[in-house]
Image (cartoon, rainbow, N blue to C red):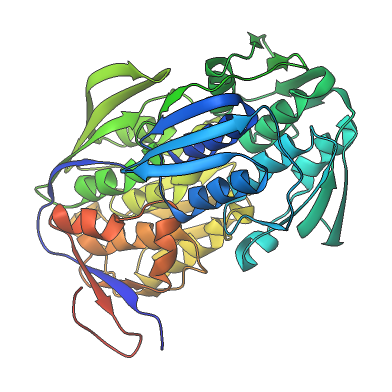
Length: 451
């Protein structure tokens, strides 16, 4: 049976209050640190998407008891470390999950073999394997630095590792490995990246030192530290909140509020950029929850204009460039986005796929090796034509971004392989329909019934 596709059509203003799924980055870390810790960790608001569920399964393989209790509540009973898994650890499509787990596993005297789906097996792992190798871990892969691969850890030594490019995944892998390294580790960041690992390590009882100087940020952690189970409240994912918020910004008459969104300053680059473009974007009831800043974010339809996005902002919004490109399509003038090399090696080549999808919908776009320029269609009251059938190559953010495009385009936009949306945003279609969006399930041969 041929898989269904999804088509988004213009249906009028969007309105309502919703809650975004739990933050994916924090959800992965909560499960991994809970498994490394001694005692019970209780988690509320966990993202129950495919990627995070793969990490939960992996933690069971390493010996932790991981129990879902319903509605985002989970219990993890850790035994103070990882045990050698009896079988290959399949991380599905979870790039964050596999890289962090490899770092954690490298700290123990054992071997662990990792694999994933076709997409994850095609993604490079060398930038994580390199620092782990400098610490003393060894690895072997069937093909280059791709999965499936086996890591053997234990007896790690201290490393001072300078990130060659911004990557919270690499930083986190080193910090997790350093928990069981003689002398710990130091990670040097020329540009700060998301700091959820540092924050959560402290919540689990570890000491982490962060020092900013003129040239870099230095994160140090001592080896031999033992984690203790704790309570983790997972805030709403700003990367997921971006989709209904941008949909409201580009759809006339709309006003949408997303409650409980993570407002960590290392994750809010998109919100800053949208405001620079003229977005009516406000935050209410800002508060602290689980060691992170959260708030309710409201977006109202706005007349946007193109901007040049500073390349050094990329680490704080790397996952949001696809949906930013959609906002740029409805702006007046060009929006220039550079410093995006990492987008070439995400779940897909996101630069190429966004360029192709936007072009198929009549949007002016110029692809660069490490960037993208989108020429907005607002000048002269022209709209976005739409009408494209977009190949997503199994990338959830490409799919959701183009569905948002279709909600405000002149003609419907169709995306293939919609099932992968559940990796980060289970219930996305239902949430958007609840706000008034028109998203229908169709067969590849033609229109079908909405479900």
